[in-house]
Length: 266
Image 1 (cartoon, rainbow, N blue to C red):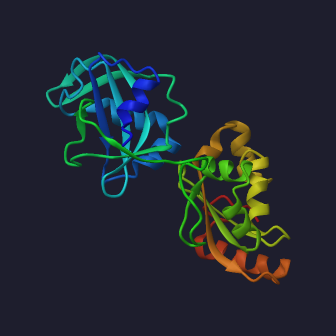
Image 2: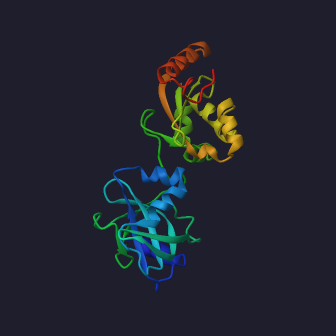
């Protein structure tokens, strides 16, 4: 059995320090999506507690809870100081510790006693998976995924074979959701390389895909694509013509109002 303690101590985490393991899980919001798309807000969530749970703690080892007891490692943070804001609110100033980058988002542990979300590091936690390459999702079904821009970028740049094969043989209508503004963009993929070819173009253009509205936003903020999420609304036959695909695309634009209230401009 390999434990998270072995992995961390072998990479230099101080064995004599006061360290807590922390598992973030919240039914009210998707913390993994928050972590991926708005890191500063996630840190605010982590650094604010209703009880002084990190009093005199040197480091926390942070995880995001998944299904069951699965927990994904997202980093080691040094607790620099603490402040009592009011009776039921404590704020901590933390700094991410370098040296664990190769483990971040890849290591999954089995969390002992899910009801206890913070535990001392002496409680050994078994590593049940170290994911190679793609840290997030593997292809299962066309209607069964939402990819954020970071995930899509990794898939395209690394040419993951399952995603490339399945998206290349498929044409369709797709959706880009801007999780910051809440606005939507509808597009169609009908070229020879199918959805893969169209989405690869978004990666090659830093997220805008030569769409006027998206390009304007990314010109203002080159990292804005971090808010984009990609999904498929409808599959189209391989023999579909450009006119037929655009007709279906227009139907979805009308249904969702993306010309009037979203990110489409034609």
